[in-house]
Image 1 (cartoon, one colour):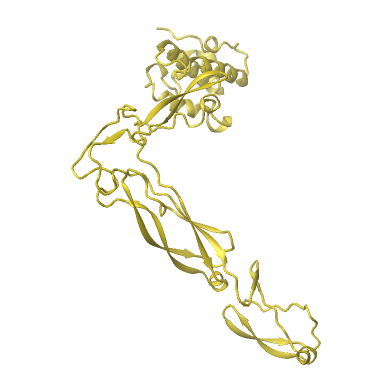
Image 2 (spheres, rainbow, N blue to C red):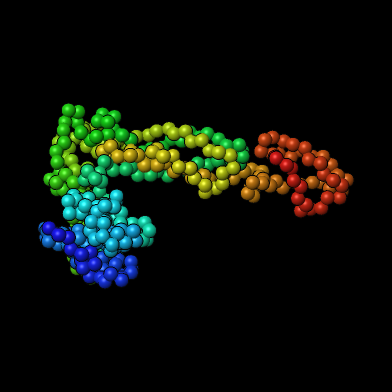
Length: 328
């Protein structure tokens, strides 16, 4: 069967600009997208045709080959997609490749909602990522100056040791989720001013895994994780400031059914000091002198973050004078 002319498919002249081609494709995508025409094979084929035409006519090199040699010229290109024999499930991943990145966002996102086709090639997801945890670490100025390793005790969801995080009882299997048919996703219809759209969302029955546990683990009741308490070592470098934070990858709540763990975010708090105030990397100490010391000069001991040190006072010093002690 001979292929239709790409310009004819999109309804644009050979002199059309890339923007005009894009606009024509938007219109065709709105009209023939499978989510708007469930079960309509004719619409699906027209959608494939329009996507193939757009991929060629929006690319300067492919378009030049097509204008000179027709369909055969494009077929000889190394990166040509055989849409006619492609897997219907793969067309959406290529669709996102075409419109992502350089065009400033996917047309698919613009019209059908962001993230509607984020499933993996195999369909179901590989478990749910654990949530992040946030804790505060209160440090003294001495600890901030030198750096410190803190041990913090946190309560978090941890991987169930009985089932290894699978959620299934030992020796028990899983079955295909009847709600989503094993894909890990379900269709959700939404009415808008453009008509009814169908978004693809994670199946809540199986948590996006596509599998239902036949016999849940008695320890975690099928969740794959349990409440626990752990002590974590946090190495804090010198010079941190109030509000800075450290991220410990994977030390948050455990993932669900084998998913990756969340992160532990440690937020730095600065404890008030008995003697000092901090100003960036400097430490300020207010020194009180007697009248004779100020007039005649003196040598006094002052506290520092590393111990006491001697400071020379010149005769006739005035109140409010700033003296600097380097590296103290």
